[in-house]
Length: 244
Image 1 (tube, rainbow, N blue to C red):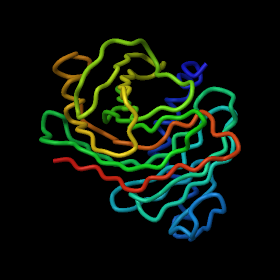
Image 2 (tube, rainbow, N blue to C red):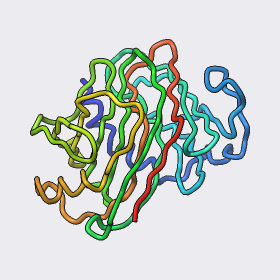
Image 3 (cartoon, rainbow, N blue to C red):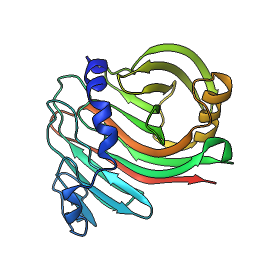
């Protein structure tokens, strides 16, 4: 059921990151979330489309799936933020809270695109910590699943196994009704580390010929949450994206 649900909603989700949001009016507010951090954060919201810009990045609550429950986002900065999410165990992705950075450079003109992360995640539920990387025209979506909990799976079919970008991946290729989806599933489970994103993109271009010299658009990082019944906390302890 996850494939069907995501195929119907991914197109809507990818446009949410560029539309103006009413929740921006709360960006300067200080909000203490009872189920979030122990102390008041710099910013927070329970609005499903809440967003906040900081340091060249934008954070999104992004509660977009059918039958979604409540979710609250908080942040002290783009590299220290999290959500409390209470999603029912009914299948299908309910939300993708994330931090986004725009690059806007053709991949063959880049010398590096790297990113580092450190997260704290629940031990139960159904979710994955994932990069969601787009070309500038949103025709190609590259997902990097760093860890996975619960009975969830990627769109498409298994193609191969490859070691690239600092990880060993099982690679899946699919179509969700609006764009190509290339999913890289870490064969291990990682909550901290760094990823050589450009090496992954060049593997897609030069080894598999699935993409061309596309312009790298949004690099997103967060959690695709399918279920977190009763309410669970997800936190980014540190994060960065570097390109040049």
